[in-house]
Structure formats: C-alpha cells, structure tokens
Length: 332
Image 1 (tube, rainbow, N blue to C red):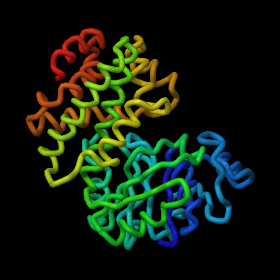
Image 2 (image 1 turned 30 degrees about the horizontal axis):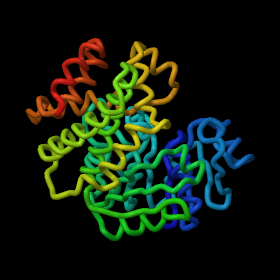
Image 3 (image 1 turned 60 degrees about the vertical axis):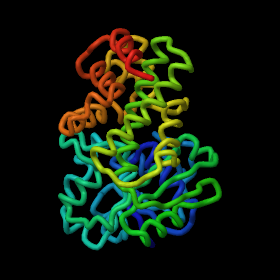
C-alpha cells in the first residue's frame, strides 16, 4: 500500500490525510476541487477551509486538482466526501480507472438517489471485487484528530490481508486500529448513528433531559439490531467500538454536526435554515430517508420508531413536539 489517493477536501478527508501522513507508511495523493485551497496547502501545509490547525506533512502528501491524475498511480482510492456528493465527485471516473486498485470508503452515509451503500455502488458500477473494498468506521471526530487526541478506528474489509495492511497504515501515536470483516454492518451502523444523533439533538432542543437521551440511545441500538438482522444478518458484536462506540460519540459529542443539526430543528429552525446556518453537511438528513425507504421495503418500519420519527419531522414536516410526544410512549 505505497500510494493512497484521498478524494475529498472537507474536515473528515483532512483528518484522514493527517492520520495517514502521521503514520508515515504511505504516500498520499490528495484530490481537492478548489485550486486556491491547493495553493494554500502547498505553501502553509494546512487546509484553509477545514481543520486549519491540522498540520499536513509535505513529505507524504501531494495535492491534486484533477481527480484522474490523483488516482492514476495510486494503489488505493479512499473516498471521503459526503454521501450526497459522492456521485458528482466520481462522475468522470470509469471502471478502467479502478482497475487493480483497492477502494476504501470513509463515507458514513448512503447514496441518496439510490438508497444503497457506497461500497455496493462501487462494486456494482465500477467492477470492484468485494475483497478489494474496505470501510473505515469507529468513534473518531475530525476535530479531535486535529488535536491529536487518542482515538480508535475499525477497518472492515472483505480481505483479511487488505484489512490488516490498511490498519497498519492508519495506526500512529494517537490512533489505534482494529480490523474486522463486517463491511456492510459497519457501514449501516455508521449511517444509522447519524439518524440517532439527530434525534438526540432534537430531544435536547425540545428540553428533554439526559435520562430521556439515555433511553433514546438504548432503544436506538435495538433499532440497529432489528435493521441489520433484516438487511444483512451475520454474527456480530454490536457492543464494539464500530457500532456502539460510534453511536455514543455522535449522539453526545459537541463536535457532532448531526446532533447540532437536530438541536436546531428542536429549537424551531426549518430544515433549510438549519442547513444554511451550519454550512456543513449533516449526513443523517439524507440517511434517514434512505434507511426509512429500505425499512419499508423490508417491512420493518414499525420496528424503527426513532427512524420514523426523525423522517416524519424532516420530510413530512410534522412538529417535533408532536412527534416526540408520540415517540416517548414507544420507547422502553
């Protein structure tokens, strides 16, 4: 794994570039749309728009404005753009561009238009074999990476060898990694925890306390279990950091943009107003529609009351006050 092409210029992409460059085991080709940002990175070794305090090693990182140039000589392609924009980011790429390359998804969301996982889209549309795909999961906020606070990542891959190599590449003095095989389980859990974080934010905005939020998160783990059993049932331990750990940090952390988004909705903001004020993407907004559509297809939407409540608030424009009065009687 000598060269990795990182696709995306946001906070999470910047954090991943820092993690990999600090690991010192690989060279990075970093694709960013904005040429001014690239010029700044080359001159000052930091991303001016996102995580400007995170120092980027010029010895290990080369920024590119052309995506094909960035991936041409890379062994791996690491996708780190919001799920809502991934199709646009890779629209100029063809299956030939992915030939003999591994693909890593660090995207905690579904393809909105298709309601499918990012890895499923890559495997199907770019002819990438399942064993050449990996997912990065776990509780790891970009802001804490910039501060080099201890964090843990889980690498899920269809190939034990690839998972081990990627785990070693991403491990450094402040990042500890583990590798597992549950690609789809980690992806779906990462998607659903964003929905839960929005619900926690709404609850906080409405004035519900810590006791209620604890019950909310506990019930949310049951929803994840119901969903995964129906969508992709294998033996897994949902108490692991890639599942429960990621949900906890996203539900409670001050850095959680999904919780922030939900908090604004709970305080009376419209969806549009909250999105405009945040100026950042809350993946859970798009995810809840996809998960709800999949749940209906699987005939389990009644087993997902939290997901249904968030969907009704964001897409059916039902009052958060009314929806949470209904929800609180469905929790246990």
